[in-house]
Amino acid sequence: MEAIKEFLSRPDIKEIKEKHTQGEIMTEDFFRDPLRPMYITPDVFYAPADGIVLYAMDRVKPDDFLEIKGKDFTLKDLLADQDYQDESAVVGIFMTAYDVHINRAPTAAYYLGTRDTDYIYTHNISMLMAENELLEEFHYSKDALSYLMTNEKRVSSFYGNEVRHKFYVVQVGDKDVDVILTWGKGKHIKQGDRFGQIRFGSQCDVIIPRKKGYEYELLVKPLEHVEAGRDSIIKVMRLK
Image (cartoon, rainbow, N blue to C red; front, side, top):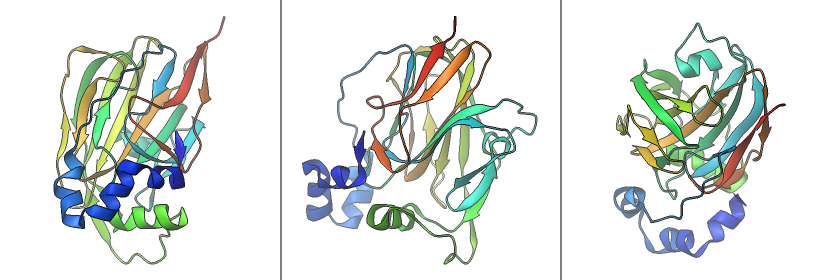
């Protein structure tokens, strides 16, 4: 992982910022999928997406609030499951226009399936608006927003080889752009395998229900930049 300033000063990102128009960024760079080495660490969850960590919490109760695109949601709302009862470890990642938008499996798992949920009604923070605040001032404000927009959301469920129980990855699309892709359902996938893409998307969350006999250590902090399949976000420790 790296600080936001380090991310922006990387040669590949500086080239995109300096040589490409906004239109080229959104139509060409946005869809790039560079080759990456795969790292296999069974007791570690890697980032499922490139982007800036918005929150990283090891104990979130089902009715605790999280913030997605400027609006507060409970963990139940995020999963679109009002019967969800597990305290969970949660990491939320904001994907900027400069990031690769391919999603990768955070750990080796059986891909149980996906479900599209009802649209979430959020404040009108587009990806570009929110990232300007994050990249320039390292925060964004809800106060200047005047109306609500709808956002597509998809929940993928997996059965982890190491944690030996279900975990979830939630993909949230950008306003008015409804193209969340997933593939590989019903199969075993390796850690770091591609499993989805959020075209013009803006957020990806990992939710790991806490289970007896395990402990979970956060390896990232808010406002750190991470890359999918490369940066560790949560260590899972089986207690003896």
